[in-house]
Length: 161
Ligand SMILES: [Zn+2]
Image 1 (cartoon, rainbow, N blue to C red):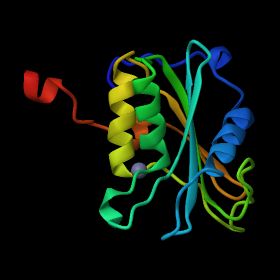
Image 2: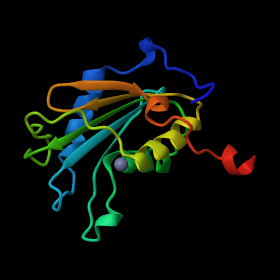
Image 3: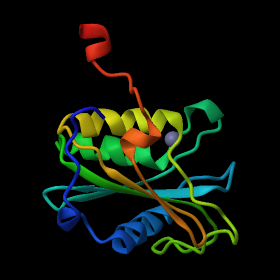
């Protein structure tokens, strides 16, 4: 994100706590088709944390990813900009209604899909931030900036001039 504000490391939430929030959110995933449960947690500069889990549909193409659900929840709650970090964890198996289950052994870090990158970019762009994205799997956590996941993002400037 050109000219984006990089969140001060001191202002970032605790990485493992945000991943834990994403894991907890995965407990509410509705994934009867893929059984690939995903949780996401968005952290904002004001301390807000908004979570989401994937919501599948019998019409597969209508399924929603955890990151998209979290971003929609955040925006419908009135949050605009200030997105400083995102945690995503996937391939969660089992678990109860209140706790995320274990991650499939050997699962590599799960990165947001292309659609979710675009949706996160819209939300981040409202505050001009370039959030850190923590992509968690079984053991490894991949840390990347949103701008690294989605360089040359499509933005309003592309059609409004
Ligand atoms: Zn996605």
